[in-house]
Length: 516
Image 1 (cartoon, rainbow, N blue to C red):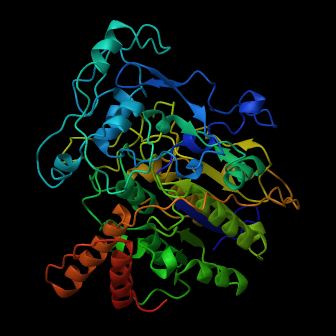
Image 2: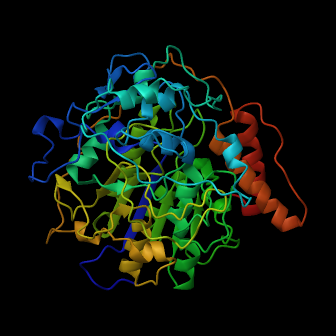
Image 3: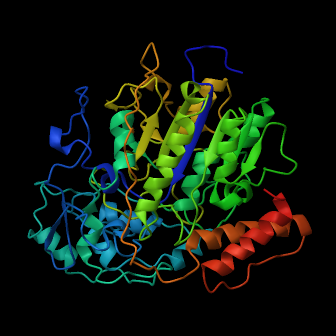
């Protein structure tokens, strides 16, 4: 237990889906020349950022028009997010040889136009079939997007990557430039208001340059066990939840209408849960606050799928902003407010544009991808992260003083620092924590979110019914749980829509984790 009054006693983490830093917060301090009111420098957009399309046209980053009918559904299709997509977005190709003379972070529009098909690559995850990772290459002598140079012409005139159909249906009138759209503070009053009202981390990176599940594994375990794709639906490495239990600390996992994916994702979470540990819906989280039973560490999930509030492209972003306001209000009005650090982050960039090159000084867990020969020493793309507490000065831009940047394993490092825990892996051992964001000697009594109203999307926009990718992955994790429990191979049925997969998840969750 924490006895030091200068330390947080509780940590709550809310992790949304698939958004880059620039796409959500790139304009946060644009009107103040990318400096906060405290004078802190902010790595935001400058109006110089752009990407070429397949014809070499310059596509500049731009503010999303709040009056656009699809404003809260941008970009209007699901971008590529896998390892090969990320390589193309950052280095100009999905695999070596990477083109010479092309600056980093210039492949977002081209990958959005013709998304790389990751299916053949995903199937290599379980095989010893090396796939070489990015190498050093010659950069353009002029770093400012000379899209009509010979190097660029050779690049964008070569055939684009072969495309594939996303599991998320496209909306109408999708344009290549959509991927360069950036939400303004006005459009995201809750996320932006919290970022300004407390602290924003402008150099927080997802842990691996790839998609959802490996990055969530790093968040919970400090490793993805060498996996770079979502082929593996649950992980056997020791989780932070089991780690807390082993040290007589409590945890809670809430969200997804009472069926949180994290329970089946972490294979070491078994029923009955240890005393003081809780799971269930978001309403149960609010009850824990009211009844003064908040665990030491709480992990919150959104509601998955096209009708949910995860903010996954191209679902309704406004619903996620509304959910965030509800989380904040519940915690702010509770007795735990002064003792809790709330961390809001996103699992990975989801193929959305960001202008910052990810660092290459990550410490390996250790792990190495059998399929791609990748050793996890390169971070993924920047993601939005906000730190919230009355002990934080408004206008803080939080950066670590460490040479190692903040990433999802900084959540683990923070818990380990606060609760005096040993690290899970070499990655979280090397990760900086965020405890130094607490700079005030007295907690604030103001509320920077007073009067803030959550945005509402165009109600006429309807997403074609479908079973989302993460819902299918959740179903797969529950099937893996059933296989381990029964000793027989259990595979989920084919799902035709979101209702089908939700019913399967609900049935399987109740079978193995009981009633909420």
